[in-house]
Length: 64
Image (cartoon, rainbow, N blue to C red; front, top):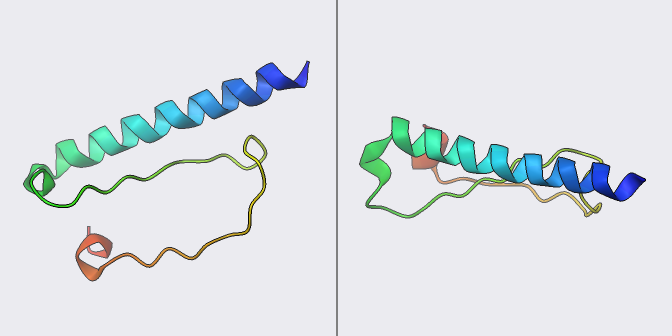
């Protein structure tokens, strides 16, 4: 059945995203008091297809 495979991939992506963000803030504790950056890791094929959006980060975030 295809649905459990997609759901498993989606949950794996969500966990990877959470772990990546925790690691990012653990390595940059000075950012804990400022705006919060949240990044989601999405694997192609597990999520509904939508048009791509260009992400333009502020220079301060791009430097990290």
